[in-house]
Length: 132
Image (tube, rainbow, N blue to C red; front, top):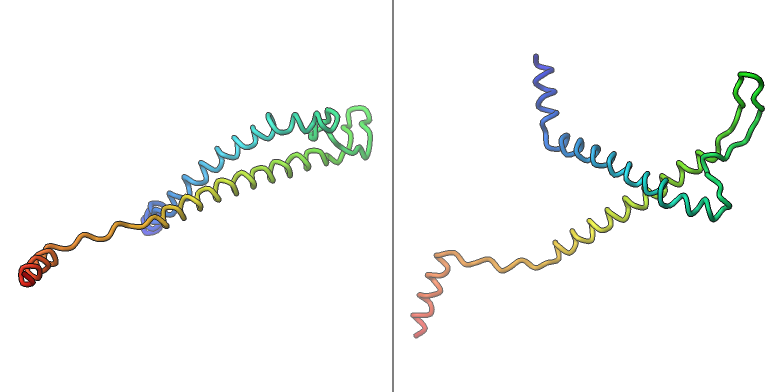
C-alpha cells in the first residue's frame, strides 16, 4: 500500500501533470507539422526535383526472385524523415522564440508604484499639516 500511496503522490505533482499535457500537445503538434511537411511542403519540392517522391527512392541490392522480395536500401525514406525532423525542429524553435519574446516584453513592462499604506498616508497628511 505504501508504494501505491507514493506513486499517487508522485503522479499528482504539478510537474508530472504539466509534463503529460506537454507530451500530448507535442504529439498533436507533431501530427500537424507532419501533415504540413507531407501535404504542403513536399509536393512542390518533389515537383522541383522532377516529380520524385522521396519515399520511393531506394537502392536495389538484390532483385526480387519469385516470392522473395527485393533487398533494398530505402534512403528516400531516410531523407523524408530527416526533412520532417528539420522542419519540426524549426517550427518548435519559432514557437519557443515567440514565447521567449513575449515573456521578455512581459518582464520589461514597468510595474506601477506600490500604493502607500494607510499609516504612510496618515503620516504624510500629518507632515503636510505641520508644514502649514
